[in-house]
Length: 220
Image 1 (cartoon, rainbow, N blue to C red):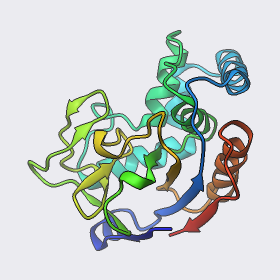
Image 2 (tube, rainbow, N blue to C red):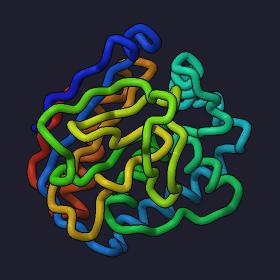
Image 3 (cartoon, rainbow, N blue to C red):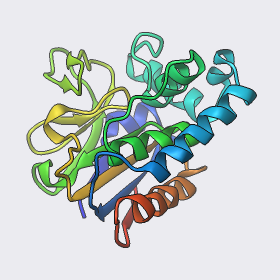
């Protein structure tokens, strides 16, 4: 398991921040019918219970948006991933299907409102990860997005550099069909509420759909 720390600059900007890390050995697949039944059921429920205007009142999403502002980023221009996913569904655009691990993390984000980083743990450099704030001109290649301006974004860094923000993770450490160890980082900018349930949800879904063994869960 990795040592995960929170920088002083995050503690100053976001004193309520708490995180949960889930590490597990897994077996990825291109598609899981059972998982997609759960995704489609959530989508159907969301369409009947929510509107786009409701997204900004979801407590976890509100807390993440406020963290962006405190760190120096406009959350309406660089949306947290959980918010972007909900907006996509409520605009009638189907959720993109990538692979089981990515789809699974997306489902948990949709259900909980947490923006969750999902990483191929074997591609992370070193044993330590720190959560900080993006610097001017700091290089970051977002997955499917090219070079991303991460100045003012909360960002996890390993020994090489940035690996993930609540808006997008990095191409270097992204999960692929060959991923055998996952590290999922749950960002609780509003505090501890919901973190344990979310970590347990990730572990349960990994066991169910990705042959995941007993996960190691760390709170930080």
